[in-house]
Length: 234
Image (cartoon, rainbow, N blue to C red; front, side):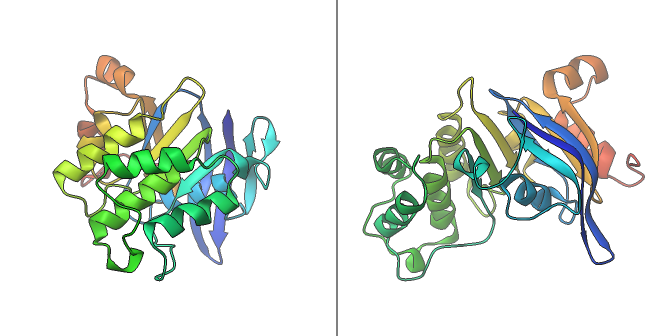
């Protein structure tokens, strides 16, 4: 469905993503793992078309990502991106104006699951409530690929469970989900493939069951091996 071929992104002398090749397949959940500065966010932004690669190419259904692919790719960034005057209802209308695949009915259903109401103002929301709102408005699109950048940051345990349930509800044979997070153990419960980024490089992309069977290691074990002192070199 989506192919990254030797993708590189440079900002002056700094290389944010360095020759990354990765294929995302439909019906699978990908856990994008790595510390801050490893290139996860930059790679996601290139996939959605917000950032242009310095070299390499990203293809969606065989075509370079661009205006057309954005119709099928939903991205949730780490940054807050709603105007302070907006209510939760305004946020939904805002998305409805921009995305043909946005479903207000689905949005309302997700909000109810997360105990959010339409009259709440975005500027009064706690960090946890804002995270829920961002998830709700992103997952209310009927996209083919969902990219969620740190959706569980600053969220308590019970709220995490709500968010994970909501996200998994959209998974279908023709849908791809990629989630980045520092909460490795949380992602291990739901992901099919673990993608490890380190210092702008792709270190490993491996099926989680395959990792357990062939290496005898969990995702948490592999995370410690890669990012701990003396971890795997690129």
